[in-house]
Image 1 (cartoon, rainbow over the protein chains, first blue to last red):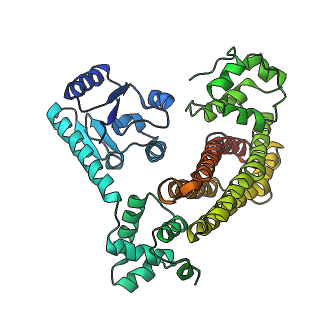
Image 2 (cartoon, chains in turn purple, green):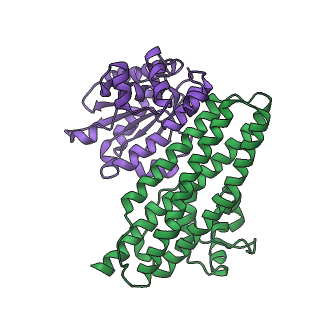
Image 3 (cartoon, helix red, strand yellow):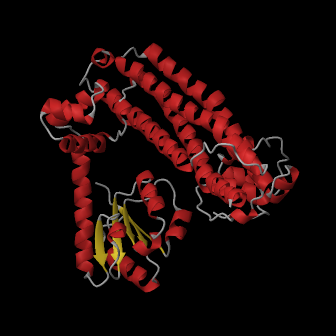
Amino acid sequence: MAKPSIIIIEPSAIVNDAIKEHLKKTNIFNNINTFYSWDSFIHSARQNMSQLLLINPLQIVNKEKEFEKFCQQHPIDYKIAIVYHLLPNHLISIFDDVFYIYDSIDKLLQKIKLCIASKEINTKKKQNLTEREQEILKLLAKGLSIKEIAQKVFLSPHTVLSHRKNISAKTGIKTIAGLTVYAVSMNLISIEEIES
Amino acid sequence: MQFAPNDSFVELIERNPYLLLVVEHLGKMDFQKNVTINDFCKQSKLPLHVFVSLINIYSNNNIKINLNEWKHNHVLILIDFLDNSHNYYKKEKYPLINSLLQELKNNIKSNETKLLIKFFNEYFAEVLEHLDYEEKIVFPYVRQILSDSKWKELRFSSDEYQEHHNNIEEKLSDLKTLLMHHVKFGQYSYIGRQIIFHLYELEFDLHAHSKIEENLLIPLIKKFEKSLYG
């Protein structure tokens, strides 16, 4: 896998510089970009920005929705919060992991490496749908609801829904109509079965 | 990138040719080339802040917009802008993408292409429904509010409006993913590439369209509603 890039968004210049210097030494990253505010980052952001985001969550207070939307629309795979003190759960839960300012830099590196590793696993996972997922995809393509599928395959609606989410994560396709085209292109189902 | 009133208009377009869409949707294509942004606005009888807000949105700049600068007649410019961009989707992009998909179907006789066309048509039907909703409900509603008279029944909801946008963006993203990752074009990959390019352009303008509505139109509607209804 190519070396990832990282973006640091932290208003304190000292903290910002210190993290950058430490990360530079590790040679893990292709690129380290630093910003002092979310707004200045957004201002300079281009479509193909990097994969890892290390950000002080106070930067996105009252902009949580905008932030989440941005991360979905851009290739930002991991978001780690730089936290100084206790913050409300709803804010922290937006992030994949948390780095406390009193943690050692090694701990931060460990977290980053874990993020990169799980990203690699995710990419590998994407290649194949399990048999169960294929079965559920077929039923989704036939137009069955989650509840109907649950009854048919003897699973709880909750489990079916989580399979449905995995299918979307692996294929990158979110809507039923899109998944139907996918199922046909993968020869999982014939067009006649859908039309009936 | 910030824009200054004295920036050259041609350089502006050279940096981001998509801004020609802004000029076109404003209905100001007939402009003198060698002028500054400020001159262009004067020539076209366009308030500078209106133009700058639009080019910022089309340049992906998240600049805070000062709603106090926006007067009634400026919002009318915005409504005309959005109305014109509907023509771009309906009369230009849709027929182009549709005819390329038909070309694909004539060459690749698979169920997959058939379904892809069905998916695109369903998607575009949803887009048309949304555009229709804007033309029949939102725009007349805004024009009514701007003329300082109350709407008889409140049929417009900004939440519902927002929901439309999300659905439309999700389907378009699926369409792109299918074409880029899953559909096999073989020797007709040049048709696939043209479709993908057009979808990107469509997505770009539709995204700017939603942003204009979410960041400008809806806050302005709320502001004028407040002064009207208290």
